Image (cartoon, rainbow, N blue to C red):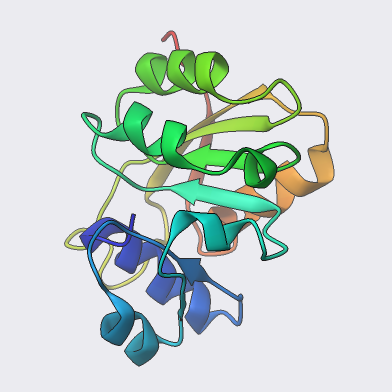
Length: 159
């Protein structure tokens, strides 16, 4: 999703030189362009891109629906990362919905656009590497937070 939190993450990562693609149910094409983010108008088009890490930034209520709407070819070899605040729900949903070949990384950045507006230094980011075959890729995804100075906290989703 490319709502306030998705835009918050994208803005930071584009500023660090990362290529960011965004898709959302609303039309954020102009907003994305203004931030240097490549707008993808429909979920099917995501499969045509070489996206190996997919951050899902949606509400808890729409999380499962969003996952189910993503094209299977996109998910088969991807690392899927959530940024929900309810970890057990995210883990259970991703394990139930995603193909077994998809890596699953649960994260909870414990900050947002207001508390992180001046930087992420020292702000906590909780994570759980739920199902990871490609540890190098998972480490690169976590480095998106680490490189910003986040305090990384490894914690099981069940805690």
